[in-house]
Image (cartoon, rainbow, N blue to C red):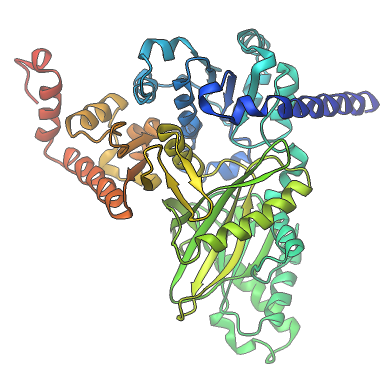
Length: 535
């Protein structure tokens, strides 16, 4: 045990030293893109509880969500290594490289190294890499260590160990700081910063403690109609459940007794409405002991929205606001993340920026680094004002990260803090609507190449001249799950939505029960090869 502790201490010190080197290379990493000269190691490992991850349909392909990083190859000095569990389809890589303005495809491809563990098992990619010493050696040999940094989906001890073994700094918060991105850690940050948030509990680790916390919350808030129970490390709202108090309103305080309420809550918990479609009380209750949980007041309101703010903390400790969004939520009770619109509504986006800055400064004070996002619930007060309640912090790359970074890297534009708008280099404000969850059964069976044919025939691709159009992702999800991600960019919110709706309309038409339209796409794309064949 003593040897293990010494080894962990040495690894921690090495990790801290590598993190400090980010200060020296920060200008090269995030300075003017034209002067960038770096090697970027992308390890899109979803190093989170794997049982929770399985609630997300198509999670096997979510390693594709950081492929926007390939756009950084438009600088002719940048090099990039992208590692995945299983090989990526060549058409997907070609698609991203064709987006690069002014760079020959072959030049960009020569600066990209794709590596795979050839392991589709249910464990984090970082763990798979660590289990393969020869792959580790190959990655290290391919990097200019004095000009390298690693990016990931989230930071855990696995990513820290990988960073140390490769000798490459990880551009992310240290693993021990990830507690501030949990449900209970978020509530603590909100309390310390004085940011409004729903009444709720501290972390509980048993069903009995959850029952007691729920009753105490009810007794503090006798008018509550509903509560939300959240697994401490749930993702995308899939770890949430809604507890309805209305059927037992007759014992709401001051009526009834504490014991009666405790018994009633105990009976109601197994009947909660779970946001993950396959979730059960038997599984959920077992997870409480493993992951912990919180209970908090459900924010009621006739007109509600779910805005968010994204920022980053630089290696110099500076807090920068990157974007605001109005999130698109679904699921049984509107708690599951489906997509987003950029920017957030003008009536509250500047307020979001101020609250995000306040939270970011507290995170920086605690030593956090790189991306953070804060989700809110906004309730219309009917007088032009919105009540903003902070819900949770994400210390990882989330569903709003890749659409904004795609826009930024494609246009090389800038975010204006004074207006909350994003302007391209031509000075045009840009807007988008994005989703990870365009999913229909009729899309199942579409291969990446089929999607490319449809994109080309209907001219759905992003036009670098007008800086409008659609960028697709999660293409690996299509065939099995009928699921696709996309970001539709326009010069106005209306244009962005029109572009998005056109994509959906075309995909629906191309996958209707009569496949003649799809055959016409192939015939149009490959007239010689198709000659003489029929559908």
